[in-house]
Image (cartoon, rainbow, N blue to C red):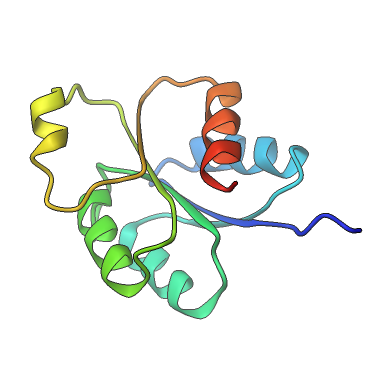
Length: 122
């Protein structure tokens, strides 16, 4: 039986980060779509089948927390990983009205991202 390819939407205003994540996830057998901000990502999400979203928090136009809220309202079952270069306390993360499925502090390893993707897409 053929493996079903999963589509992962990568959202980050830093092109280098998007490129590295996309290239790595494609090498792991996933299909990726890129967006440079939350506004663009939400438009893509509404038009394409996305099995997961990996998004930075700090972005122009629509940040990752605003995107998380809109995505959860649109499709509450899609796994969402949020990334950030800023320190957020456990209390700040717990106080978020909408919870990501995983939260990753930058810099992260690609292997850790792959581990989370596999775990959340089971």
